[in-house]
Length: 77
Image (cartoon, one colour):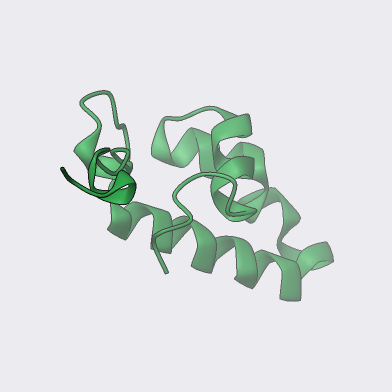
């Protein structure tokens, strides 16, 4: 008999999911751009806002927010 930990497969993440709209490289780019925005917030807010990133990558603002706060794609660094 297999141990309890080996009985279940790991949940799919990121590009393993068939409906994934972004890749690990895009997640890294979004996070890097968001970090740059935070350091120059007042000057560059229009270009690096969550809304601007969402428009640039063709995804929702809430998806960008979840990516930048590591609620999704947390396995990508």
